[in-house]
Length: 58
Image 1 (cartoon, one colour):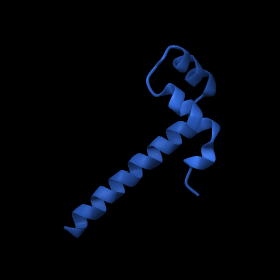
Image 2: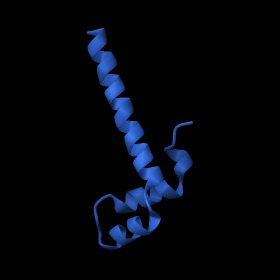
Image 3: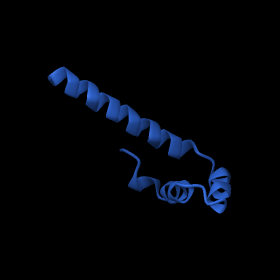
């Protein structure tokens, strides 16, 4: 049971790290264009990119 929990938590940590890096490395111009096309999540990504201290780990 403990091994399963460790594997699950490691997977979740990897998922969060990947999403953090994707937001940090995304291009603002592309996000703006996607937001203008009403692409789902583009506006939220722009808002997160403008305030990186609220989601980046320290």
